[in-house]
Image 1 (cartoon, rainbow, N blue to C red):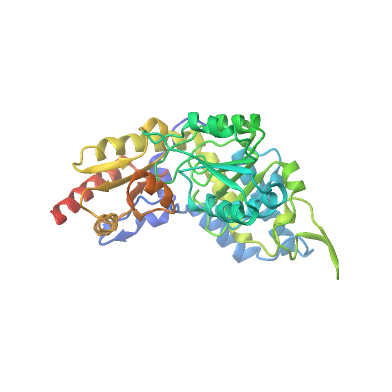
Image 2: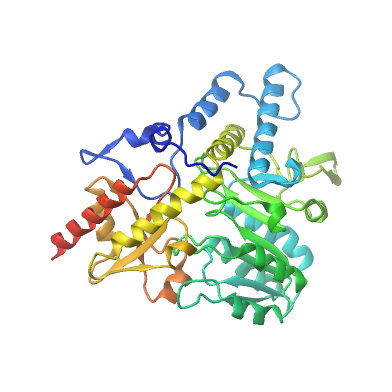
Length: 410
């Protein structure tokens, strides 16, 4: 992967929505942590599929079916390449990160966890990496333990080491917080978990779009992520799992394509990954997912990370100038392109609404991380998040917009 910076103007030209005006102002999109915008190559690839190759996959022998199958499986290879999976078969297409985590909980979890077993999570987790384990814990009498956030908003390694004494069966954690932007030391977390006899699940919903992620180097057992956060379409995500684990797991859903043979009273499952892909999948979305993965690889994930780090550093400097504004999260060296903040006496939704009137899209709320907001002592934050198409000039506009908010509310 290249370390050379990419051409900012060329990248921005790839995203047609950036030409849109909101309230007679050029759109400034600072909500990529929720969902990223889509480049022309992704939009065109999905359009091309529907116009020229649309058919169902795997069982047809006519030309369109064979083309569609080839495009679907090519996409699997493109996604596998982005995360350096040893085999494309280790990548399972799901609807999103949430479904990927639920798949693991309902298959691996039910098969391998019993009453009293410990799962370690963190206070930083998105609800999608909390609720499935809460549901499974209630069903199977499991014990959930949580790694706290340090005073400077980092993953507490000392507390984690103490929790590992409990001999957990699973450690499930985010590689990058969607609220704090905190980048966790994933490789060290995984190494210590394995030494304690635990498997690991990495929530890569925020890391895969923004950082170089190599599942073989990390030695991750499971990694989950979504296409829509990495310039791909919505409605499709991926679950990476080590092949021996996937082979041993029972199927998630029953139906077409996940079977080899079916009789009236029995069935035999298909091989991995098809065992976990019941029914007609999101074929066009898979095509777009693959093209999105290739687009990011062509930019170079090192370059993507460097660009966002530069934006995060600049944003923290500019936001620090604003009186009565507090940003939650670590220093720029430990975080991705996320700035969640509160302003004294102002509700986050009011801030977001005024900024929208300036053509600036940010998000307000608890960002599907209510427990983390409780830890931070607030109910909600305003979140600005940055991606490959954002610029320092847009951060300047954000700061100007916040001063306008202060002016309006006195």
